Length: 408
Image (cartoon, rainbow, N blue to C red; front, side):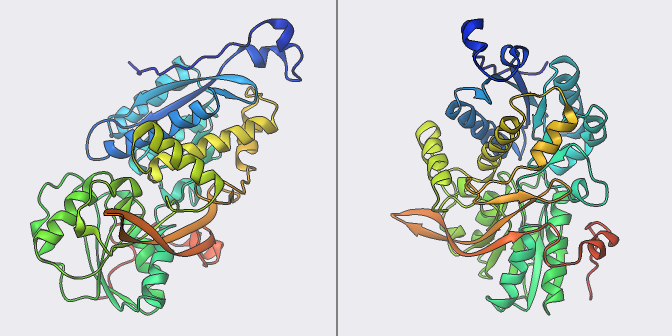
């Protein structure tokens, strides 16, 4: 059964409701939002943050959007494609949600894309699967976080142009998110004159990285793209093995929420992310303060991503006067959202429903005795296509385990 977390606010009195401009039926029926998250396995840490970010947004809005009560229905995917599809079916067919937030992983999203599109249910996802907004676009899909490669492409640019690294080895989990992250890094790094010497693919559940650590040698830098709790395990074992090469990482690899759990092994690691907790804007300060107040820690991109999804839904619903019955109008309104202030800064969507926004290059430092992310460069208005021509990009194969191929 799908677990329910329900927050219902009913408008008091039909006379008061009649003073609002939207139809009475829209006022009396709660908006239903389904949240697909993961509560078990190596990705559960991100799933918990997703739930926390969504809950904070609902609290900040008193569980109302565009004058209507909001009911949140949570489905635990189990972190696998079959479980994700089952929960999506329950949310749509049984719970009749108006839109879905989530899921987290690319393989979860790919498992439900066709089903969700067939039911014309808008889905605001964190999952970074490239082709959802590229070669096989879902017309009911909106992504305010970014594709797998969207952070890694500017990271590669920074590695070549400013850090002056010439050679790299990449290491990341053996699944679609990993392939696409490192494909984006490799393409830009090599286009700008660098050389990826080797690519390593540990299984998503790897308790001991020793066989892989032995291969991390003979280059200028190691690029890791682990997610969930895996970055903690990898960096600890990397340090314990006595390895000294500098480490770069994607957004999840150095997520702000992990800083409380890392030791000094993470000091100096440079990462690229669509969200950074030190962004000095009103929207982010309010978000961080709320997370610290309610949960006691600095938030990361998973919580921020869901809070941002809430902002997108709110803006679209306000544009529609709170109406959700016309699915075409709803998805068009969601994709038309452009925000100047959010926890990730300003952003808008391209014609595929994928975000165009800032990517932040950060370095792990120690502040007041605690690890923290410090932003050292901002790449503004980063597209999923980086600086490549869109038509050329879409004519290339999707990033995979073997594409781009190694040159040696």
